Length: 252
Image 1 (cartoon, rainbow, N blue to C red):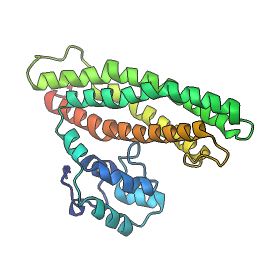
Image 2: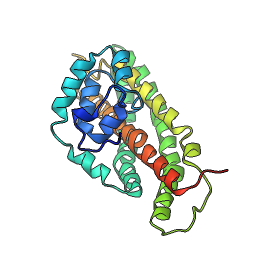
Image 3: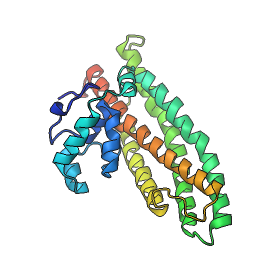
């Protein structure tokens, strides 16, 4: 079954993956998110398995999805129409830039919160440590994509459009993706911890304006990360693997 951004509830079965549905209409992400169903790192899970894991009624989930799927998502339509090299550009400019721009701000604000509010809110020290680890690992991860994955996919598109005769370097998508999925899962788990420690980014009654802004920015950072990982795991990686399979004969 091939889903498009015109997916309807009739196209979905209990075996359809969560990632397929969100990839076809990103508005459905809010439904899965409300039931604590992971649509980015856990996008390969079937609806049946996801409902069982999160203890959600499949009947009620289908009813909620039906309401959302009555409206097409323009951004999903736009993403679906991009060539894979254009999708790499979009992810790099939109999501990679967002991460690199917000890391210094959040690092500084969390350090300040620890100094000012750490005595009354010791959880801030753990939040700051988790974010420091996330920022360091994400910085390496983004560079890895920009230096290996994205150039390889751009070359696949050039090969498809006959702008090059062969790939400059003999690689394979599976080799490049070997660690990227695991790294996505690690950061997803890390932000689950941050969300839990901050009571889903709820500013405490004694929190100042800096406290509120920092927590809101952390929430925005996590939401952007979910969208970012979804676009890679459920769209770019899958389409890249499919294009590679079409263009390159398997090794004997």
